[in-house]
Length: 617
Image 1 (tube, one colour):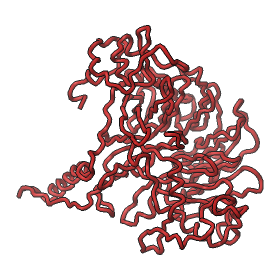
Image 2 (cartoon, helix red, strand yellow):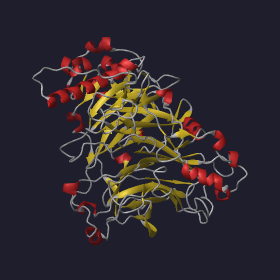
Image 3 (cartoon, helix red, strand yellow):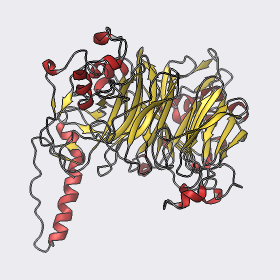
Image 4 (cartoon, helix red, strand yellow):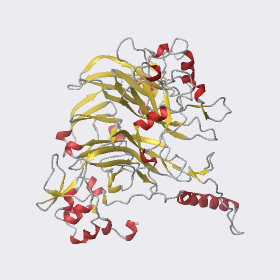
């Protein structure tokens, strides 16, 4: 319950104490202790409000709620029900990627290829790649759950314009293959998947091709004790590189989430047990790590065939004030977006697992990330010492973590020529002292009153007919998608609106967990694909036509995907539509809501003024 900084469930109470609790004489010790805990939990919610100069941000209330009756009508896909154990295991979704107008869905033993143009009414795979394991008997001898003795496709990334790279768990014996994008025909020989793909379906991994090489982050052994960030394949002569084995300063029980190539670097986003948190108990921090694409490893004396450029820093997503409320656990992060004309990534974060449930969305400028990587290093001189910053005079030259041929290392043609002092320093100092602040030093969106946390994010930075609006779609643990209009222009992140709260999970066609595992945006066909373990559901980006001929309701949606046509109807935005319509994205049309009556076309829609007082609260 308490951290080393005097917090209750991660909420600061610096300079305060919880006064004693007085109960009746009849109260038992057990009841008394329970009451103390519950009182402290209640006070914990109030602490941010008390401690900060401004009130703790309130959760956004939905302009409209889309009920289950609507999602029952949305197209869904459950995989091949004739496949062995599909009825029990479902689709076993692992990941999905969109390449032009095709959606590739990686699952158990299969990759399904869906033509997005032809999937408006029904999701039917145009092609199916079947890749089953031949090592099932050996898998059964390893003592793991028999459900792991399939081939879960965990890696699915474009290798080049013509080839798709796929890796599967292969019944606890990971393997990789290349396939032609056009025909799904295998190209070349099967490769080992070790350090490129995890051994089990629930182990995390990411992978991306950059500069012809494959960068992966996963576990490299059957016991899942050797977490690794690894570079392989690519041009001959360039060595395979990895992180240092079993060194908690490099990686400590990481959960890998995403990897992106940008400029001279590949960035990895993950959460891990914080090695610098020296208090009792394990605390999770979110990280961004960076490696140089031209890294050749160290000398034969130090860091041979290991990264010489690996640096990592903490990502801070918190509500500011005299004390801070932290959302420490990264759940999902976008590719690089352009926000305020600056390269940015946006992620969804949650509180610690043993804390009060809460979620937030924070953005991070890449130049802020780089500024931290160019700042001070953090060190712990011995196992009993506190972590402190390294004095600048103790940092060797060229600057550790630099790319050969650039900046202070411009005189070095390769990292193998770096001085041993530089290589030794970076081996023991991969962690930066400063943390990366979020855009405007505050969350774009918070969600703290629901007991269900947010799990996935996808962002449209060019929404609406003028392509000048930002809409964030957020998946949750309870099968919902929140659609939020947000503004992060200039120095303000205020003005966000929860346009729709959509109940997506369809219990008649999906089974098992309701947790949203993936989101994929298909703007060209006005759709969002929502992935659960057992199914994929295609959700329209908006439900404008439900407002029919009611102009006030159409405008009150504040939805950039909705327009009021001069012909007198509410419609979805069509590509290239630039004139002959009205919108009221920023205004307040609430005074007009009662000028129309609800029609049959609005089934499933709940306007806030149609809700009872209890529902509105």
